[in-house]
Structure formats: C-alpha cells, structure tokens
Image 1 (cartoon, rainbow, N blue to C red):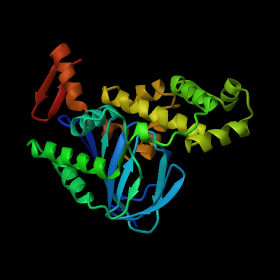
Image 2: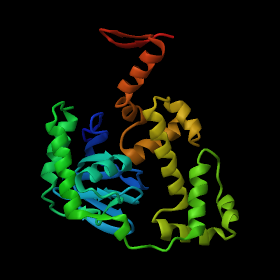
Image 3: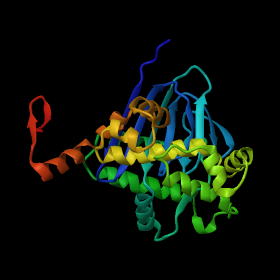
Length: 296
C-alpha cells in the first residue's frame, strides 16, 4: 500500500532555527548524529529508537531530546506511517538563548533522549505550527523562549555537572582525522596505521566509545559538511565532489536517508539568502511573474 508522503522544512530567520515535518514516512533512519540540538515529537506512528546504545519505544505524545553528537537511529514498529515534527537548534543559538534565560554560560545538555507522554509536547506543537506557517508576529519568539525555559528546568543539565567519561585518545585521533580528511578516500588500513592497531580492535573500540562505527561516523561528517555547503547555495553536483561522495546520485541518496529530505529540498529554505547575496553582488537577478531569473 502506497502512502502519501510529505517532507517539509522551514527556516526561521528571526529565531535562526529549522523546523522539519515528515508525514506518511515508512523510512528507516540509520545510526547517525547531528551537530545541533533536536527537539521533536511523534504525532502518529510508533518507532523503535536507539540513542547512545539504549533502546526506547516511542509513539504519539513522546518528546525527543537529542544533544549535538548524540548518535541515534530508528525504525518503524507497526504499519502506521510516521508523522514526526521537530526543531533543530545550532549550539551557538542554544547557548545564547540559555544564557539569556538562565544567566549560565555552561553548555546545556539534555539528561534523557525520550520523555514519555510529555506535557511540553503541546507547546512544541504550537511553536512548530507557527514556524510552518512562517508566523511574522513576535508571539512566535515568546513561544520559543517559554518552551526552552521549560525544557531547561525539567530536563536540562550542564556540561560542568556531566558524568565524566574517560577520553580515549586513540579514538579522538581517529575522529580528528575523519573530520579533517572527509573529502578523501579513506581506508580502514589508513586509520589503523594512525594508532598502530588491528582492524577488529579499531572497529570494536570505536563503536563502543562513540556508539557508531568509524565508517558511519565518516558518512555523518560528510552529510553535516554537505548541509553547510547547501546553506551557502553550492550546487549538489559540486557538493558531491567536495564531500567525498562518488557522484551526485550517491550523495542525494545518502542525504535523504540521513536527513529525510533531498538536498534540493533542504537548500530551498536558504534560497532567499542566496538570492539576496546575488542581488548585492551583481544586480543581475530579475523577479518576474513566473518566478526568479538569474542572468548569466
């Protein structure tokens, strides 16, 4: 049975946050992480979620709270398609908002990734609707501030209070290398040579430490870099070459698998900024009744 899918993303230039809506989705999302905070909820459907090697069963009314770099994946449980909504907040934006609310300069992290039947879902849903409708009034700003205040009070903690995990310097060396050389063709032998170990030890130690395999970590780094380039207006075919993917098709398929929408759909929310830059630089962008024309 074919389900009608909706994959919508909005970017709010006032709050500087993204709003996603995925409706009618059957797709399984692989193990990955984001560089930003994710605050979301499920409106319909049920999913098996794994976050930082702990498993959860999530459904309507449950709140999802992912910190930057929290590895997670999910898959469908029953035949009901997923209707999922979330907002994405970059760390620097969250830091400024939390400082304004609490006066604390420490880094915020959420203590738990899932809050079952959470009363804050209603406030999140109302804010999300405003973002989807591209609300211009400042009631949207108020809703955002009050939501973050409630989440910080109920589920927030601070980096200075966080349980310290012993840092594995070898694994950090691998991460640094992957983040610096993501454009290149990297082999497992290359990574093993960095720290002087065997392949099995490397894969096992890395996965145990990071909750994600070395290759999946590399894929996620590439996708996150691709998002930055899309926001700047770089064409997907060029991004594929700049981020280490074999071709545009390979890149587009991976992007949709990880993010839930195509690269072009993601880029569209930043087109106004791109057009404005073009106007300022060249004055060759013309607005017509049928859309936008960019002169060569």
